[in-house]
Image (cartoon, rainbow, N blue to C red):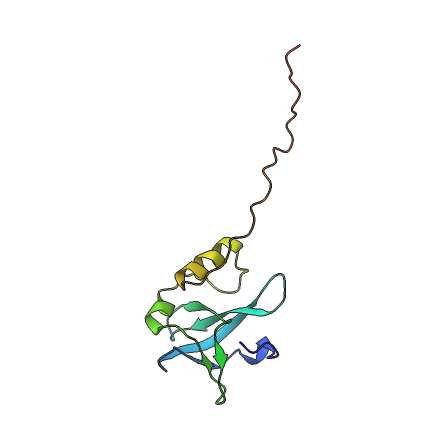
Length: 124
């Protein structure tokens, strides 16, 4: 996606799938923790529906001001539901990447530390 776009300018825009079918309206934008770049859009899929997360990397803001997402509407509506207004965890992001068939290497695991225990042999 074009990186010089202010993420706040995406909110309220209509979003369409790869075939031109309307998905809904951009409700929220989620930024990458490391880079601050727009990474996910939460799209309100209907008046009484939930928000569906879609990746922005392959999406495109077209000349008429709408967001074109390169996925099928059914796939978008079946995306995992994590609610909006909260930070996406790395695990949730991985679930979304897998759902959309995108290749993303998982974050390295945290070191396995046993804090508070000692390694000394207590038998004397």
